[in-house]
Image (cartoon, rainbow, N blue to C red; front, side, top):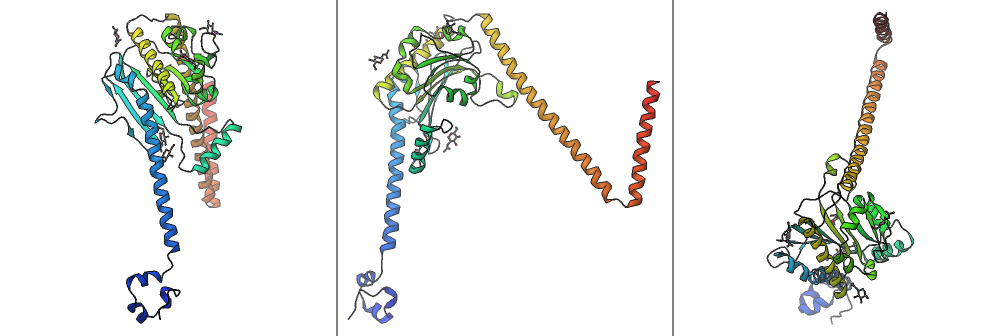
Length: 357
Ligand SMILES: *[C@@H]1O[C@H](CO)[C@@H](O)[C@H](O)[C@H]1NC(C)=O
Ligand SMILES: *[C@@H]1O[C@H](CO)[C@@H](O)[C@H](O)[C@H]1NC(C)=O
Ligand SMILES: *[C@@H]1O[C@H](CO)[C@@H](O)[C@H](O)[C@H]1NC(C)=O
Ligand SMILES: *[C@@H]1O[C@H](CO)[C@@H](O)[C@H](O)[C@H]1NC(C)=O
Ligand SMILES: *[C@@H]1O[C@H](CO)[C@@H](O)[C@H](O)[C@H]1NC(C)=O
């Protein structure tokens, strides 16, 4: 009689041919396959869940600020009824355009890497104790590029939570001075290159759009013309006007409504600048030009240093080559070469004497 306790290989060919397909199936131990299959399914489900979670995070943010963008812009989203494009697993972006005085708005999402839940948890915990480890958090930068010309300057309203980090990771903020003003909710500070700019851009509407509790998610609002990355060559210093509203990727209705108010207030500031209702004192603008010149000089100095180092290195390499060549010569040739070098020196010295006398 057939027994199913024997594994596939223990059966003879005769036994196997006598079995039905189901009986043959039963002879094999399927535990490993079952385990692998389960693992794959769980993995795929987790991946899908992660993807859905990410997409819903981005969608809920974009829907939360939809009102202010659709009210102001002819186009909101990336066309084809799509609100955003997924640039990579962690980077999403959206777009708005078609408004007077504004050339475009880019909305850039940067989700904190968390494909490895364990690593992510570790980073989150470590960042509580160590300042150098940046807490992984989902961020959105709303970058408004105006189409109007105005002075080059940097002024920002920055949340006190993480203000040192923002200074460190944004070159343009590193160029400013911090001013803890009583005009702002206590959770924010000004960072600007001159009081003139922070005062003139702090309109009534912007003031009333801010709130103490917003310091917990609104990282900063910055008017800038300089790059985020620290410049290395002069080209990086070419000014590019824009207003960056940097925030955590919140999903609360109330927070998104508050954020919309901020966007509205910033658009209004640009309009006021365009209409010359806001103008800046020429002294303040001159101060900025000076500040930019200092930055240009810094880069030129570094470049000069690099050049000199390269030259010194080249010289050292040449000397070494001469020495090596000399070693390769026979004793006779070495003597000859030495004699030649000495003659050369002598001639040089004589020439100098002749010039001097
Ligand atoms: C979801 O977003 C996280 C970043 O927060 C990323 O690491 C992960 O790969 C994304 N998942 C998918 C399926 O795209
Ligand atoms: C997302 O964008 C940032 C900067 O734009 C880049 O450094 C990072 O590698 C991107 N992430 C992925 C997963 O492509
Ligand atoms: C801080 O800002 C306020 C308001 O703009 C200004 O009046 C004050 O002079 C500033 N303080 C410093 C030290 O610049
Ligand atoms: C400030 O926050 C309080 C409580 O969260 C809220 O009731 C109030 O409306 C907010 N004010 C503004 C100007 O957003
Ligand atoms: C854009 O600026 C002009 C002034 O140059 C102003 O008249 C106009 O109202 C502004 N546009 C909007 C939509 O406010």
